[in-house]
Length: 145
Image 1 (cartoon, one colour):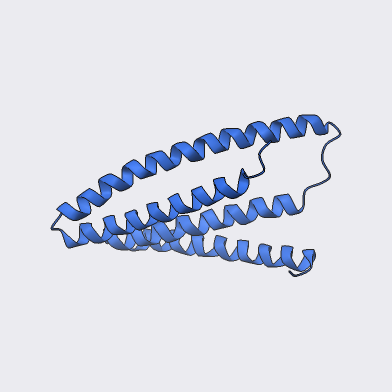
Image 2 (cartoon, rainbow, N blue to C red; image 1 turned 90 degrees about the horizontal axis):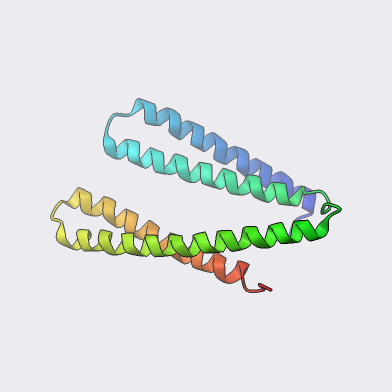
């Protein structure tokens, strides 16, 4: 891995690039007229914004000061936060699974090719999200007390 300083600089550069891409997509969204173009640009904008937010949080962690004097409080807060997030991740997987089932059913039943393409895109995203969330739960909660 790069030095911490070089790594942080690289993350900052990537964060700015994501912010720039989100801004460009937002501007283009206003200038195009077709629904498909607007949807594609919105998805790209939201993805870039999500990546920017992830990089922001990584940078916060990397630049964090030493733990507070009341370490016990920080540990309890951290544990409670993790449990709340874990419960929400598990709920999210359930909701996405239900949605995926409905979307896949509609993909098989519709004759509208444009609708089929868009629903297939949603289904693929849901599968990817589901896989990523399961990985996060597995890795983040493997060492639970």
